[in-house]
Amino acid sequence: MLKYLIEKEFKQIFRNPILPRVIIVLPFVVLALFPLAANFEIKNLKVSIVDNSHTGMSDELIQKVAASGYFNLTNVSYSYKDGLKSVEQGKADLILEIPSGFEKDLLREGSTKVMISANAVNGVKGGISSAYLANILMDYNNDIRMELMPESNTAGKSLTITPLFLFNPQLKYSIFMIPALLVMMLTMVCGFLPALNIVLEKEKGTIEQLNVTPVNKFIFILSKLIPYWIIGFVVLTICFGVAWLFYGLLPAGSILTIYLFVSVFVLAFSGFGLVISNYATSLQQAMFMMFFFVITFIFLSGLYTPVSNMPGWAKAISVISPLKYLMQVMRLVYLKGSGFGELITPFLYLCGFAVFFNSWAIMSYRKKNK
Image: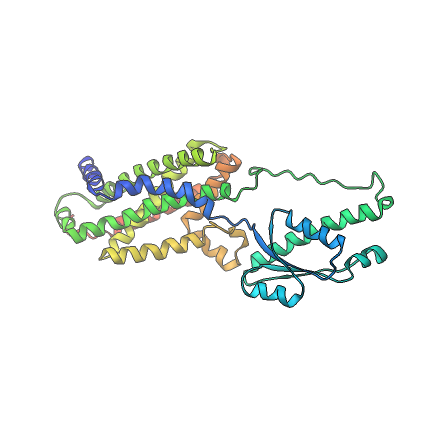
């Protein structure tokens, strides 16, 4: 009986003109394009410089800022009021004001002051852009000290820092996002499709035919889960290929470990989709319910910001998000090469979700004749 029910599910999927294309094309497009768009690296900052000095040293500082690679010099204003106007008009993100006695104070007193004014409407962008500019000023300050006071920089008293970046040496944010986007694809395909499955059968009336058959609830739910479990492996394999083809990224750890965790996650989230489908009475209702829960799970998963940065109440609530545990596993295995022994805790959580959601799906399915 199970064999024929699974065959029915696959026939329904392949007869649909949209679903097979979604299963293949959606992961391909998302993994190819989204890592470039979902990028939190802050570059191409627009800076307006107010040069009240007009000296060789101020010109040298301006050239250093422009050549840094982080800033685009929008204009050199003649007053702070003009620089502030460029910020208000959206032409600049921050202002660097160089005082009139810049070179004179440096040569005579050995110190001077400059002012950085950042647009903090976007607090993260304002803070990072100010830090970038402050680092450039510190570097310029060291150059000036070496030039003006070479005798104070004696050999043997300097400290050299050589950074070593592990697991993502190029510091590419796209490398960090690819494993998370892979989880998102599994969520969209293996969560939404089961959520719409039983609802579509309710709307077509075929669910009534199944209700009068001797198929018990366990076999019925299992026949709904297995096709999407297989589809999850297809989506995962496509994502592996796209990540390698477009970004040259291969898992640092075992692929079998990833497949193991994905098999449990897909089982859990497909069960959750079936729970939604059991309670929904229309396609629209199922879509809204699924969107509500998926968006909640995404915000609590650490997709963009680490869970450790969340407030205490959000950390406590994040334990209900299955996405959180698979994202941790994907990033650890993909980027660090972690083994199964280091991932036992998320594995147990995912197994708990699988048992809970699928048990709920079986109990909540209303079958008239058992």
